[in-house]
Amino acid sequence: MKKIVFEVTLLCCLLLNGCDLERLPLNGPTTGSFPASEEEATMGLYAAYKGLSLLDASSTPIIHVMDNITDVGYARPGGNYTPSITSSVTTDNALATKPWEYHYKTIARCHLVLDNLEKLKSEISENDYNQLDAELRVIRAYCYSQLIELYGDVPLVMHTLTLEENEFPKESMTTVQQWIIDELTAVADHLPVSQPNYGNVRVGSVAAYMLKARVALYSKQYNVAAEAAAKAIQLSEGVYELTPFDNSSAYCNQTYEAGEPECSNIFGYDGYATSKEWIWVIEYSQLISGNTHNQGYYMGSRLGKGCAYWGPTQNFIDSFQDINGKPIDQSEIYDAADPFTNRDPRLDMYCARPHARLMGFQFEANTKYSKVKNYWPVIKGESDAPSSVSNTDATNAYRTFSGYYWRKHTDNKDYETNSSKGVSDLNCGIFRYAELLLIYAEAKIEANKIDASVYDAIDKIRTRAGMPVLERNLSQSQLRTALRYERKIELCNDGLRWYDLRRWDIADKIMNGYLYLNRSGNTWTKGVITRIDENYTPIYNHEEAKKYFTTQEVVYKKEKDELWPIAQSELDSNKKLTQNPGY
Image (tube, rainbow, N blue to C red; front, side):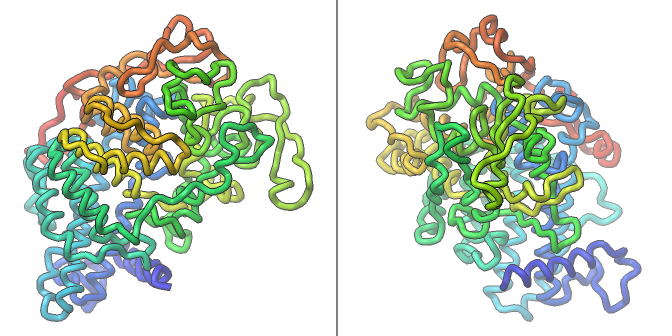
């Protein structure tokens, strides 16, 4: 019930925000008097949350775009996303410049309330006042955390700007990192542990401590990160936990005839409604104007009525361990002629590969499969047997360019509405419990304070996946490798890989050379891979690999591609800004 109230109130807030404030009635809110009541302050808070839903690319929440410009995912080649992996982004590239605009807009929504909130202190209970203040400051801190990871040094604006305040210099990334950590330290305990009545759209103290831990980890303050993550884990007891995969995990490592692996009980509509894994999410709703996306269409296969825009790379597929926990170059049971059996079940839970069922259809990328099975008549109870359909997943000119699809962050329910003009209101996760466990483990490993809790954190995730636990008494470097495997696999398509490559200082090694793409669904030989390195990156015999795979050359220039450019329009309007190096 409270979620419905949240949506209706948010709608009112959006209508208010869409008006020209100068034309509102004299008894309406203005930037000088807003908020004039607790109700208005809450409306302003909802507007700030709504701001987080506006940042997208190709009608996809940007969180689910970011991994597709790294080594694990690939976007349809062209001027929108290829520049991000070929060191050719310009100052008018929308993907690279849009986050700056939208995060600062959300920060401004926070300031609209925060600037005058203290005037309401005598009219609101102390707890309610502190919570409103804290939620707004967490949203603002999150936006700044995204800005510094993408752009480095940024202006640290702390109030609503006047017409005269149009020039702000940058603050150093380290200054902003510390400001975020201090902010979250100040407000975390003013929040309830969680706010499940609002579907975890509104932050609680677990989310605040987790954000503190993430920022501290990224800034290499490992003791601070470990302490904050431990606090978040402690507060999560009885509230947040890993959600077991559903029974469809039994179809992993099998063919389309067995069934379709799904992870919708975590990453689909059911998951956002019931899973205890989600700590903070961005809400979408078809009941609210402008509060939808079209991610299902852009992620969907051709037979799934999608446009096949995003997909995992061969590099990522080859990163998955065998079912015994060994990399495939060391495996006794991996067979390149039958590469999709005996693998980490997350390959099938999170990705769709040839000979699997995807969105109700047999998925085959090779043109020798002119017809494939359509299981929707069975799903809908119209028939006991699948029908046969033409295989547009192999013949459409704009079929998958990588040879694979993402299964994670999709839901078969979107099949009913997928189209170029379709809408989806599948929520988008910001924080989930699996990442929290990995933040804690990494911070302890990098601080070299390794104990049983590190193994326990990683093993919980591996056990959920059906993988063996880690061997004990590993060295720091061995645990680092294990941790990086889990972040690469478990957090795939969660939007974190771009940051991991840069903060680990391995982007120049991984994003120079080639991405391998199996668009034709070819089979290959074991000789295409020479080894899996310490970061769980496959190293290819290029001359052998290109016999089977198409390639995308990637370029990464140090001291340039760590950051994105600032839009020229921002530099023109703020003369105190300076462009990032290399642009």
